[in-house]
Length: 407
Image (cartoon, rainbow, N blue to C red; front, side, top):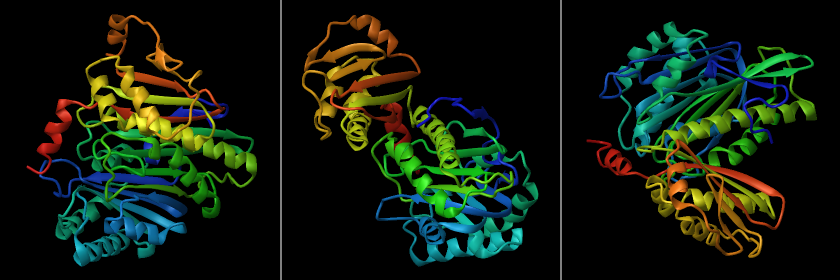
């Protein structure tokens, strides 16, 4: 699986969800948030899209998640409407009706079928959507649509995010070039199995929904589902991927599908890194790389266990090379390892091998841990499988942000 910024015929570009041809986007101020910020994003394809998605595993789900999961996979999606500032979760029958009405209003404004509209919401749980504000803002959003509007869309879906999160690539093939672009939001309430994050990805490749759906699920499982900030899985999480075929380049053969999956992995991995770096109150992004596992599932167990360890994340905040917390998390992960060969490297420095410490310069490593990106490398020593997990440090500001989230 490719993980570099440029892998073979895949080149990093810019443009987010409008990097792919035939997509237009916008972000407007509907007044859903208390702050005077854009809070309603609209994404529209000029033609029907094959579409697939993955959704939160929280048993309590927002009605927007139910709507999208009922409509996907599909071959006829035209639009995505996303609001921030109100999750419309735990809002009962009224919430369901508001979701359906938002789809109806969007379809009328954009002159497309209601069933071709996908919806997403993010924000405070238990609040009802201000339907009058959404209805009033939708024509403005439609009029603001343009082929460079990906960044406006990315800004409109932010909640506690401090930065917009976008990534895009071009894929060179023997038939020509197609693009994949995406954006996401996520900062807190982030944990594997979709986290409190919304991801939207578009491509102008021509890939049928029956091929797109399993690829999306595999890539999300290797990326977003290996991401954690604070251990909380949200009610609204989803990743939506739309393919409109505007490039005219079909993706159907084995090699073509593999190249597409590699490119989609790069997009999703980039977005994961951006979420981890922007974790609420975070001072650094942390990447846990596990190799030497007997299976990919075991590699993921170990990586996710370390990523989810609050003690480890507190040590990272204090720039404390306390490798014992990392070893402890590997030990309770359930992933088998070799007592003789398992090693832990922190910021490139070997700190643990053969179930015992390796002497190192603590002052030097303390300084290295102050960098914006910290790597933890773990070799389980019994196989060839690998996995990567993403997280951030746990800081005083995380508590402050979430103590005051509603007030």
